Length: 277
Image (cartoon, rainbow, N blue to C red):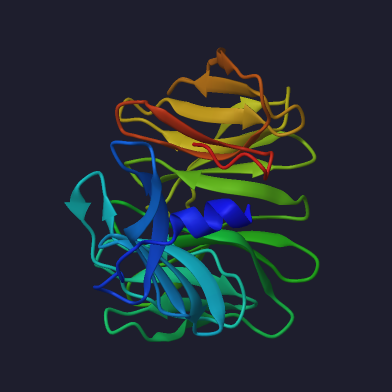
């Protein structure tokens, strides 16, 4: 090893960026030499290239940042919060996330403020859903004894669309702002017209029994895609009429996913060692 190190030391000093990491290359006679790489380390941030950096000192947190994806320049803005949150994009450049009994909104100036607050003792379950047509937000709220599916419009007026003592496991929305909500114990999924209020809510049974399903999303034809919550490796497709069919059987468990309007599915594995999509 010592001989290799000695042979790798260049005969002339390396000039250029002193923070650049060195790499071993071989000349035409297969002699090793050290040359400057395109990776730099300034003790707080490792820059791999102009588009990718590993920052070990970003507001006390570490992170891998990609500034360029698929050759399309992406601007990045950051807001640091004191615990993990799950944001949902609004239709006007804002974002929403649940925080205890509060709905937080992230404005264009990157400040997070309370958008709507429920009474103390209430808790927002899961992520917030944003209507693609109206921009209204939908969420499941637990008051200590019952679960409520609520809608909050742009003037912050709250409407309760459905209430039950049975646990609501998840909620989803299609392109027409129609809401789909599942009761965990009964394994039933209900379809609700979000343009109504609790007094006139138009509710129909969308899926009845069978495996407990988790939502992936909807395509433009209003086909819904779900995975088996318990087995987690089977994807089902339910058409607008509520007819269920097997769509895919995978060799791994599903953690989460998304659906493009054309019906393409993007799935993440439940194996946290597998980071592939």
